[in-house]
Length: 119
Image 1: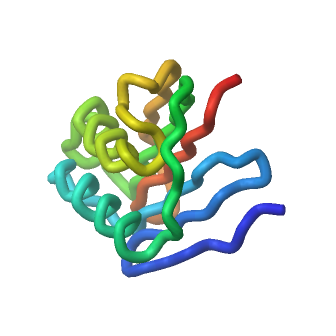
Image 2: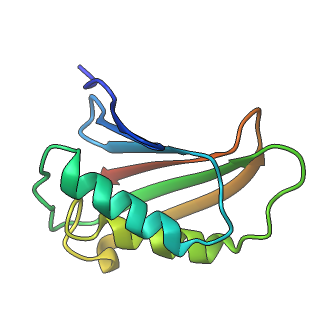
């Protein structure tokens, strides 16, 4: 059974039925480093401790925006988000064997991420 969302400020996260970590952040900023700090603090203070895994991971990131897309490099966003997962989901972001990062129009601004251990 998928766990309930744990929320704090602009961040919410949960563990899915398959054991993946699902994270959502409301709002957008072009300062991608902001997300690294925001999520690191969330995992440190508000989310139950996770045991970092040692195998390969698949990570899917979606940046959703209203209107024109913000001036943000998706590769920089991905780096900040992967850094925030290091030490929490996996030991190091070199364990990410598959990475999909997308930008799409939506009804509200935000970021969604799913990190899944690969078999």
